[in-house]
Image (tube, rainbow, N blue to C red):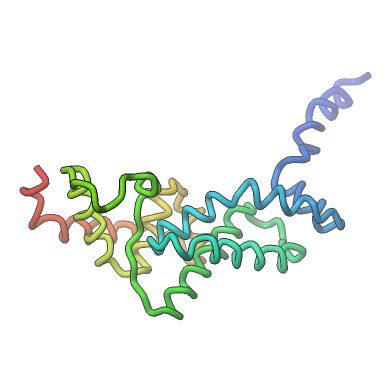
Length: 197
């Protein structure tokens, strides 16, 4: 066996990995509907988190997540494999959130994921709760177009390139919006900074 054959065999498991997104999508396109369930299981929590962080309304998370995956199911056969599946999926998720906000004409703040499991509001407030509330109120004052890039960068840990692809704009615009969002938060929080110290 020559060295080329050995290299091909070594590379095959990576190329033929059946559990990566692209492989699952190809199998779905080829008629294996069961692979869609695997895609949903893999990405549903991330989709739900983005919706929750964007809207801060737990009562709409499941409905919107379902709408996201219905849209994905309808359009998956047209997926072009030009970007990561997650970029395409999160773009759909962000657009569903925008549509929801447009239809309901609401501007809600996002809540960090960890707060979903915190104690109910009727219990005694702690200093941490007060700071979290102040920061949430500050974020609520940011325009939606600044809030989403900030959320994707600082909460979800996306790269600038991933954010640009997700919200469909130039990377320079993404950087500018994140900078403006952070500066906006500083200005909003500055008058009460002494209270937080």
